[in-house]
Length: 239
Image (cartoon, rainbow, N blue to C red; front, side, top):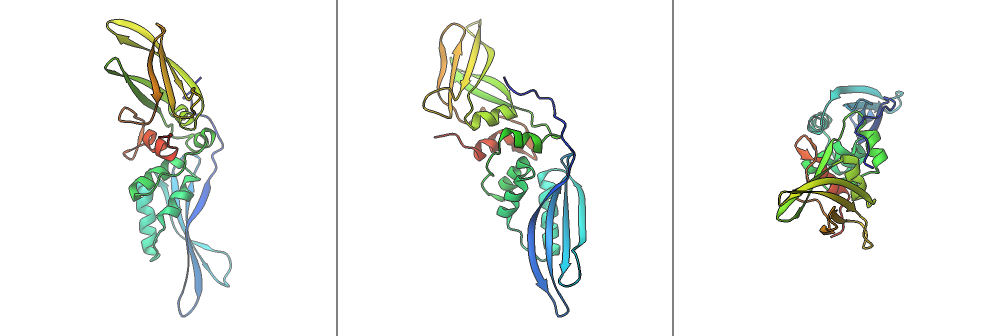
């Protein structure tokens, strides 16, 4: 059965990753600048820079931007803070480390910077990361009888399909004025991950072939990036 779309309740804790670290000096002292991305339990981000001067105790916070919502706003803040430090961000590192906080945000950053989408995490990890920002549903489409027929599944079910789990869903469609039941069986063939068979209530087979994300695949967008298609990039089905 697909997951319930009810948002779970998890502890609201802040987690952080370091996305930039560099040493600098002048004629008086030497220090390390660090830039971190923090994610709160509610799902928004903060960017924090800290300076640690050698021989002068623990690092101190030099700048902090709170309540950053969305990948594009996070990219803008990171870029501005890096410029203020006269530093150049390694966006591959940023994507990899932000993915540990929030895969969906990291996927959008990767698309913006022309980088590979990070590997799709297990459903339970993704659910914990996005517990305060529901990922919605994914519309899948397959064509038979000269029409495209749709199936809507929760996003986490789409993740499970991409990861090769055997899942089955039922809905209905119309053909020649008659209503049929349809059973969509994913990853249920001996040739492995990526298969789809759709059978109908009359005993026929509507679709029996590999299934991949295509123009009929549509999910929730985050800053203009379709997360269902990004998920398929992060866990590609066999060709």
